[in-house]
Length: 176
Image (cartoon, rainbow, N blue to C red; front, side, top):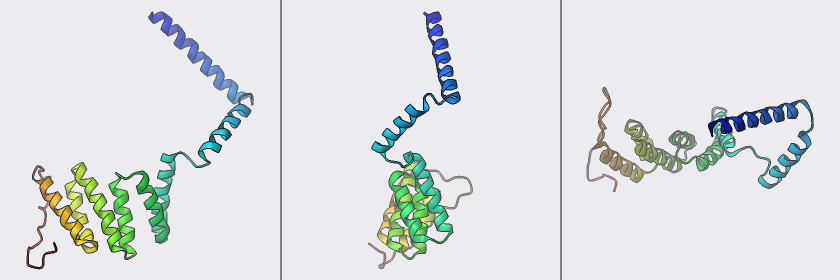
């Protein structure tokens, strides 16, 4: 049984090698392959593969941000985040651009999304850094994240040398 399987593997490998050599050395398969590719593109579109497209959008968004093309960066980050909604760094970068352009409410929402993803991943120390920006744009979202963070930290032990979570003072003016 094993000898029969090995026999088939050798013949299949030989067939693949001969096919590759024939394809590369002669134009024999090229017209057929080009026709097949054109047919697929007519159905799917000429755009690149989704994963490549998203990665290029993230790269373009970062370039637009560094080039101070903030509106373009916002659009590109938004498209990237729609394709990869569980990427906390992209949500945070979108929040940074929105924050810098004065769109504080939208920035708070983006930072809030990043914070929730980080809470799911157990990266509590990173969540704390987002709280001031969230609070500036939407204090109720900041309160919600703070509550979730405190609940989650009940089962979490801080890394060695980490500072404890800063607690905000309570008063009659506390936002609720």
